[in-house]
Length: 79
Image (tube, rainbow, N blue to C red; front, side):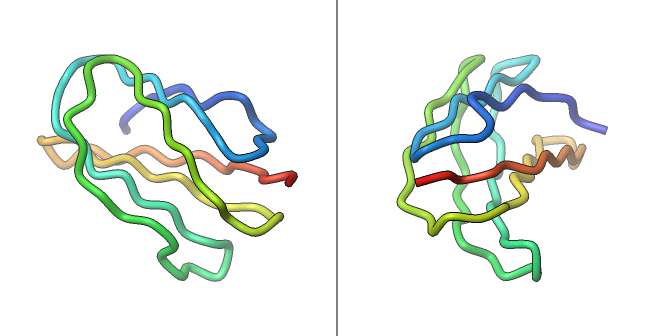
């Protein structure tokens, strides 16, 4: 399992994602019904700021590293 930090949580439109090592990560944001809201591959150096305009609610942030390890965290958006 891939471990990462996500803050602040709850968020109002910007979160910082901290990963354990530099590399290419796929970042996927889904709503609680599983609908993909955002998906992108990024070269992360140890932290990355994700800015968004999602509706108020709860989302799942999933990261997948180059080796296929997966980690997920729930995020609350409070516009």
